[in-house]
Length: 293
Ligand SMILES: CSC[C@H]1O[C@H](OP(=O)(O)O)[C@H](O)[C@@H]1O
Ligand SMILES: Nc1ncnc2[nH]cnc12
Image (cartoon, rainbow, N blue to C red):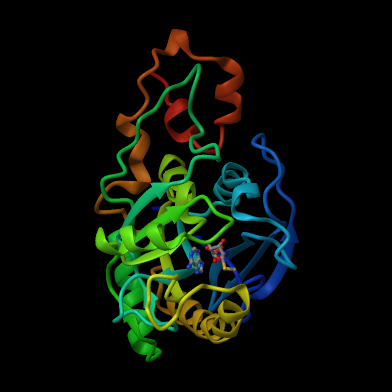
């Protein structure tokens, strides 16, 4: 049995986690470089929690400047088994107005300027991303939201753009036409890397705006977003507290195998593997690389 350790990545407007107790800050060294910030390690209702601010205090980092590999590697080193991303997003549906929380179940990756894998030359791996979100985490989040009377929608598709500029009207109309639910700039490659690191991942996409497709809302501005962020952040803190109280203390095996994703993924023959890369993979892939026989 593995102890459950809940990781929380706080996005825009969430630079700390109210309710986190017995907090200590830890700067974990990663062979993948500098993470966004020091980890804040503590507990809520006795459940171990590791909090990481994605953009760091003061919103120092833009989506393309975040070292997603270092972030996920550090969370893995800290023992995180289950990871929740709290993310601001724009909405493509009238019925998902600002303030709605969407428990997305699919992602579309439109980013192009970020390293998106721990693997590569000297150790090639192909994990499945067919179902990028852990269904079990989505269920726990939906139950926590219901208990706290927070409006959530249980599924949806999050398209991840490179940014940092918001979409053009043509892009916005295209994504809407394609049936996507929400847009953001950060959940890819984060979700891919969490899968490679065998960490169960789920996102709470918190709607802040209607992007620019909506006839009544012309262009998005950071000022408008900030107005909604504060209220969303308060609800997110309540949601996480409730989630932690009711969360199983033993890590539950993922029904779609997120926590065993590397069992069938590595294709490079042992004799063709690059020892330098293998060293960097010690945390992310240690479970499978250290197997003997
Ligand atoms: C400040 S609005 C744009 C910004 O907010 C979202 O970030 P996060 O997912 O970390 O909450 C979006 O992806 C952009 O990075
Ligand atoms: N409209 C939008 N587009 C991209 N990222 C966002 N984050 C919040 N609102 C957004």
